Length: 250
Image 1 (cartoon, one colour):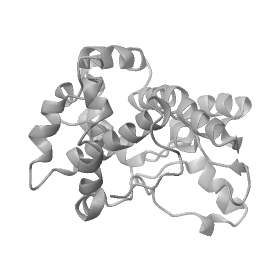
Image 2: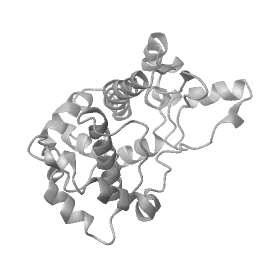
Image 3: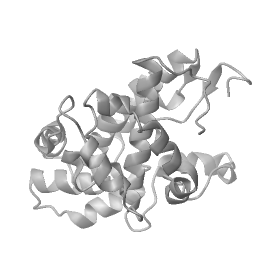
């Protein structure tokens, strides 16, 4: 991208502010009801993000990075311990958890590193405030399981709806094929002498338990690829032993 320009426009925030995570809304509403407790809704919310964690998540990390589910529950509690509708609670958790305290600082660090100016029109203050006043039925239709309704209406009004995919693409990379073709080999190469393991950030015993399995569940494959990304980041910015133009090859 840098070979073209240093300034980019993106639609970041559209899903969080205007209801684009339809597959998660549907599952959350199916897993909960109006009488669900705060804790039950938190568990349901986490189960809507199951590709982000594994059943033995508490064993993934080393002693320098203690993981505790209760701390996760506490972070999410304020988003679900209120009188808002269940769907509004999910919007609130998505905005704070995904956008404000995850995507924004993460993307900013990437843009700063590569000297990129990223312009996000959807995330201007007025539009954020406006999105908070919109009724849920202007964002998401549970019957058709369609989202970002008000944005779609704008595309229709200006006759440019053909420019977007009709359904949410989500995590479209086939990570199983990626892992089986060369991902596992690259992982084993970098974790032969892992800095994350050496510094007790990742638990070596957990890695050994699962990496030797001939067939891995996709959730574990996604976790291994995420840890590999963290290993590369760690060597780039913490130990500074590899360069940012180094190709991942063995």
